[in-house]
Image (tube, rainbow, N blue to C red; front, side, top):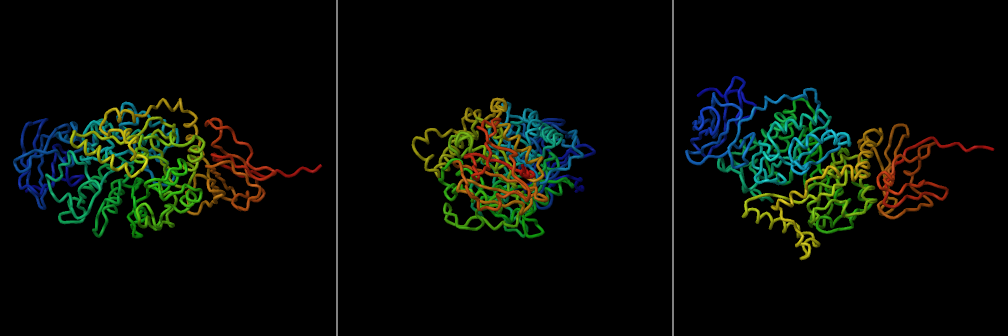
Length: 631
């Protein structure tokens, strides 16, 4: 048996430096496996693969080259696409295509990568971000996103999935960018242009389950999945059971693949509470290490979604943590949504949306760090007082939460403009890591529904499952609201979610609001600091929040956010509101600036005390106090 050629990854089809393609596959269920060439030199033809130890099969095909389409024939019977296919031009049920990642002319050799500190994340769904819904159209908008103040694009999943449209969380070809958005090099051009514009790009990956249609992993080995754990979306992946070594290898290779071959700057790990692993090293910890190794010294960002709020995910591995950089903070979203809409049903039930709740999260991270949580009738969260603010990704909107509003409506349609402007200021000036959902920066009118295209039988199950999920909201469970529930499989539902980027002009006041706040965050030396203990605050009223950001030498900042009525304070027994010695507060910024659609901001402090306008946010900085004149 010939020695195995030097490969980048343990499995898949790789073009070798001296020519030819080396195929390697893990298929322990079968004693005989063949590569079926469907196009290219020598096709059509079956080429037997050599069995190797531990269920692997491999073969070098000297005449094979980029563009060749192929499948694997298992046990002399049916053929299936490559589990490590780098491209599925006809979707997950079609043949795989050999791709040469080294042929792309990258321009980002000096790109340093991005760390979590100082970033502004922008969640993007390629299929709906533009009317065209592809990589090239999205790439043309990167300069505008950078000018707005965004620093990192977080792509919703792009791993190959079935149908004409979808969110991507039912992916089955984990190494293949879905052909709906273009070819792999189109994705590379998107990332290369992002780096040229100073933007990082991270990818949402799903390592907790695979989609139900086009998932052929079980044909190669039943060991990919396990019944040891109950998974919300089907079979759990086998990271700790018998024969789990090659399964772990597969997913670790996938994490490294996106960094090495597509130059991504990190990953967002979906629903990590459903990634089950009782191994000595948790697979998430191993993924973090693999990503950083693949980056070769470039900075990376690894963010987790974790519904139970396990803060240990974001602690260094050397300290017993899992080595990730950030955590989505659902608590912030839920409390902010209650503050903006007044609705407290389903998973919003345990939030009051008060100034104190918002203040506590900006100072300490999660709101629930082990206290009792009524909605789930159990404790929620873990202590995280030690984590710096940048570790918490804060947002008012994301793909899930907009879709869960029933009609897929954005917050601009669920609350009043002044209150939303004020809350936006809190989000974008807070010391956490802010995240915007596509179109949020200009008040997009397009909804964002749940959409997923499947064959009729599966589509019916998806439609039924979605309806059952939304029934946790009593208002959405009513007969009259059920009639408005969109069909996830309706192409018109998908089409309605596409952004109209012309609204950047027609909604210019909202766009200017976001751009000015992000400029203030970027350029102001005090607002941009994300150190632990860098701010304190007080709830001046149930709906009014005071934050004080501590600068060098008394160069402090105040942020007042009043989500309620006008607040008049004839006496102010709150030292955080007092200016530094010899200074007075001056207005730096107001959400009621007429440029943003506001009605102006009169002086806040007068002889009779303070008047903080309702549904307004104001930022203040110190100036030398005027000396009294003497006649």
